[in-house]
Length: 184
Image 1 (cartoon, rainbow, N blue to C red):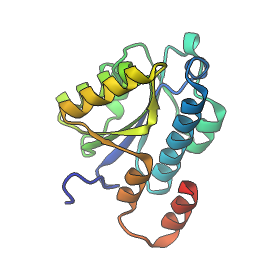
Image 2 (cartoon, rainbow, N blue to C red):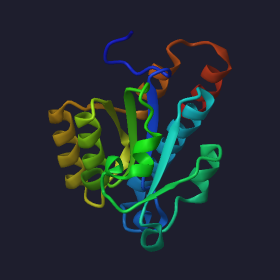
Image 3 (cartoon, rainbow, N blue to C red):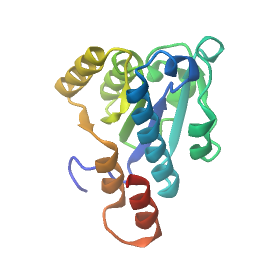
């Protein structure tokens, strides 16, 4: 066991509400980085057999996950939800693996669905890692506030590159070569 480091055997990736109509109201430069980094996390998770859960908040109103991200998710089917916390949605809760104690969070919006999900996951005994460069809010101040609250509550705040290299653990093999190219 590597304390406070992520491992592929214990991790699950939860991508929250990266949806077309939400994207339209986000700061363009920040949304580009969020989608890019979420895609890197998704591709690394697929390569390393880290289970992925994808959610969509009320897709009838907020649209669906963009095709560019879906292509990187190897057939993961989005779970529709109306609760802000993913944990409050029974379909998501069923997909959270009991033997996967580490949940990596990416997506939208940091101060609403990411924050509430992180807090509920911690209350459920999960170790939560938030990929700071793969989350976004319409207002940067709201994202900063959410990160401060999550950190204060005991969430690990990390970044895409740290997460994927923790999952890898060593610089060898095909997965390392492929993931290294994604990071460049």
